Structure formats: C-alpha cells, structure tokens
Length: 531
Image (tube, rainbow, N blue to C red; front, side, top):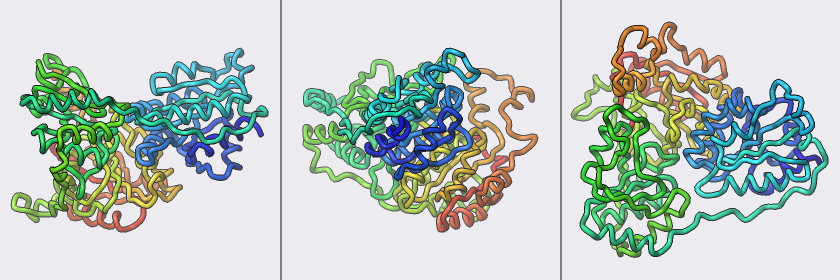
C-alpha cells in the first residue's frame, strides 16, 4: 500500500475516525485513501477555518482528536485562527497538511512556503515527513502528541511523494499517555494554605472543570470557606441541573478585580493566575490584588480531578455533600419582568426563552459576544448542558465548533449562540451543517455592529467617536441578511423581531432536528458585558 493508505490505516488503528477536509492537488492521494478506507468519516468545509474550528469542537466533546486535511501553507494559514483557539483550549487535534513532493521543493513553485514556520505558533507538535516509509510511524507519533493531556494540536506535514510512494505496514494502536498526578507534598502544602485563615480563592479550568472536579471543589469550599471560580472562557463547562455551581471570572478588568479584591491567596487548578485579555492605559494587567500569594494545586497538564480528590482526603471534607443545582428555570415573566417585557425583543427576553426551552444534554457553543450577555447567567440552573467558550479570543469560532460538537455527539442538540460580526468570518459553516443534516440551532444576535469594539474604543482611551471612526466598527449599510444567506446554503431560517416570535421559533428548533438558524434583530440592544 502507498503512504497515504498506510497513514489512514494507522490513524484508524489509533482511534482517529473523523476528518474535516479542504484539500488541494498535493493531497489527492490522501483524498483517494480516505475514499477507499472503511471507518474514516470525512466532512467537507468550504473554508479551512471551518475545518479547524470543527476539529476543535469535536476534540472538546469527544475527548479524542479528529484530523483536518488542508492544502499547503496557505490552507494552513486560512485555518490558523481557529487552530489558535484550539491550542488555547488544549483540544486534541491532528492536522494533515499536504506539501510539494520532496524533489519539487527546490523549484520554489508558486505555492511553496515555510509550512513548519506557519505551523509552529498554532501547534504543540510539528513534524515534516521525510519519506513514505516513515509516514505510518510519524502518524502514530502525531496521535500520541495530540493525546498528551489535556490535549494538544499536532501538525503532520506530508510531501506528495511520501503519500503516493510505496510504504510499510500501518502502525497498530498505542497505549495513550495519562496525565501526570500531583505529588502528595503539593496537596499537603495547599491543605495548609487553606487552613491558615487567609481569604482564599480557587480558580479552575481545563481538567479542573469536569463534573466530578466541580463536586470535589464544592466540598473543599464548604470545609475551608474558599471561593471557587472558573476562567472567563473555558473549553467545556458542565452546567445546569445536577451540577455544582461555579462563579465565572468576569471579562472586564474592573469587574474581575472587584471579584478578587480581598483575596490573600489564589490557588490555581488546571489553569494559571488570571490576567486581562488586553492592556489598558493606567490599569494593572493582573486581576488579583498586589501581595496576593499564588499557589498551584495542579498545572494545566496535571490530573486536576485526582489532585482535588487527594485534597478532599487531606482536609477530610467527605462529610460535606456537594451542593448541586436544582432545576430552576427563570420563566418568561416574574415580578421584575412583565408579560409586556417578554413580548419585546431584548437580550433578557431572548435569554429567558433560551433557558425555558434548552433541552437536556444540549451543547451550547457561545460566541454571542455583547448582545448575548444574559444567556449565561439566565441558564445557570436550566436543564443540564455543556457550555463551550471562545478560549483564544479569535472570532469566527462558533459556527465551526458547533459542527464538530454535533459530529462528536449526534444524539445531543447543539445550540450556537453567535454574534453577527463573528459569524461572517466562517459563514460557510452553514453549508456543511446543511450537507450533513447536523442537529444544530444557530441563534444570530444581529445588532449590526462590532459592539465589543465600540466598548473597547472608549476603554483604551481612544475617544474619537466621529462617523469615520464608528463606520469601521459598524456592520450596517447594507444590513447583513442572515436569513437569505442561510437559505442560500440550505439551512432553514427565520428572522424574529419580538420576544414572542423568538420563543416560538426557538421552542420549535429544540423539538425538531436541525440545522436551523434564527436571526435575532437587536438594533437598539444596550451594550452587554461578556462574563
């Protein structure tokens, strides 16, 4: 068999069974190998950023890598923004990047580029294949690299002749790496910190945000009085009924520093000490107070669940039952929100309808930015669900990541909360959703502006609010028509301009299989606050 065929068989032997593809000429033997290899499912994306974002979503939900198939350096570059997000999420991803045949590179053909140099900033592991005989072993190494806990982006560059030349036997399945466990000494040190009477915060992310980890952290909080937080943007967070509540660190520095203002010691679990997304004139980069002591119970790569379990043992917190959420849906009206308010389209009425109808085990992919700021708090005690956030800050992640989540979990409803500006970066994802009949409901928040950038314009002290300035942050003239775009790519779509209309459309979308898109027109929506 040739190198491409041995590569594909090696991936299948090692549990990799999904490929998100946007190939070109140099990948044709890989395309042919996928076509005749049983077990590898392929999903075509019309833009490379759709493929890489989908691989991110798949890795977050499946706990194992999918692969992407991309065309040379430009194809990789087109997918780099969502690989950046995947890298920050520590998602397991394998990129298969085609290259010119080894003997053709010396001619500096038009598509020749430094693929290794392009791959390094968005990958944890990079290798360029030297010959067809090496390809199966290199593929097996890529699988192992992607599985390094909590997950890594592995990029394998495959010259065309390495794919078409005769190769060797595929590599059989390898034992996968386990996350290292923290030492008992580290656990004892943290136990002493929590018993010293100082005001303590435990900040968690990554492997510290499993359902079991949250339960263990809640026991620790009850025993010690420590407050439990999670990062603003987590790769995957179990929420809702039956899960332990965790306070999310705010996005804006003013709010986050207020949350942590009295903290004397900060203990990290599966993350690092919190800093601002950006620098601001005259403001500190760190969210924690000056003089606050920083300790680590478990690093990003260490087994956080095991570390928390050991800490529960060390401080004898077993007698405290985890405080799990009871189902409590806000409803469409209450004492402070009238029936008249619910019929008006606003961030709150949309959030109430969302929480009302969100089904059990939904997967929520959130890139709603400012207009969807109420979706997260309003669904705190809704039916159990997973929440996937924009970990790397590079917009255009939501639609593709929903594809990957839906492919990984076809029996669960995926809901993509998407700002209109971010949607336009990877709008081609709608076509893949339609082609594969994926069960995804996309909610587009159409405020027709980059609202977060208008907020940031003032926050960084750039106060020029004239028409020329604001035009660079505005999505009007002409207004985007997401209903027509969706229909043009085969997705059923509705535009809603009242709270009642959203409630009806969303309730139907949760009952019926997708894909479906709902455009929520919020021209006069107040600026929201992510986090």
